[in-house]
Image (tube, rainbow, N blue to C red; front, top):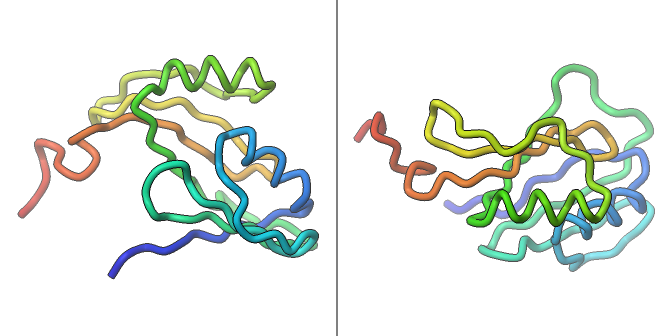
Amino acid sequence: MNLNQITIPSVDVEKAVTFYKTLGLHLIVDAIPRYVRFECPEGDSTLSIHKVDELPKGDGITLYFEDKNLDETVINLKHKGIHFLSEPEDKPWLWREAHLNDLDGNKIIIYHAGKNRKKPPWRID
């Protein structure tokens, strides 16, 4: 089994498209105003966004995008107007992370974990 895509909600899909294109995702399905889908620049996963009248309550979801050049990527995205909630920081779980939200409040973590993503020292067999 392989994860194909994640679908997130948005009250304004058109604005969400602009935001995720700025992050570097490539639009592959355009059914604005109700649905869009993106390819990530690397790998096979996709992200789709669907129109909702009201965002779900609670903590919602968190999207993780791995980038080998995290610090440089954060600088470049800031120059494009993306606001970060936290700067790149080394975490105790051996990932380096920067946090932000999309326009609908969905949490995004851009990180670099390398081999520790799937094979941390505490991995169970």
